[in-house]
Image (spheres, helix red, strand yellow):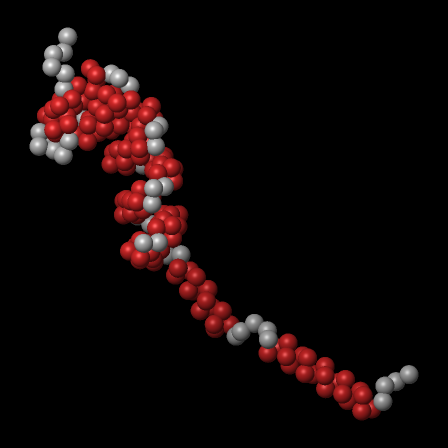
Length: 197
């Protein structure tokens, strides 16, 4: 049984309206899509990611700042610029273990980065990983014997965690030789052994 002519006209009109609605609700024209793709690509540019990380850090949103700095590193940002920012955020937010992971990963690529190795040793010391901290700090002083703060940190580890007063004395003396007026000079002087057998 064929539907009546008015019903067919109504059905045809409904079909046309449904098609028109589908076309109207379809994807936007190609130009805005292309614009959105370009915007996403720009947001992945390392310098943009670093700028956003800095902005979030200034606002106090350290988690987002860390995410943007880490993304910037993944996208090829200059590690000498971004790694200190990233680690500062990790330290300020108390996320030492995350900072340790970032530092270890970067040292696989740049094992000669003495400043980063010292920072890694300091973070390891802060979380109580004393043998690993000592290892990193010893690598610092073997590469850069004039690194006063590494000598100080090794002295504190030897004195406070390992009970090795002779080694502590040696590192405190080296610290004082390098920085006689340094911020830890008074502590270093008061920790020296009177006589060394």
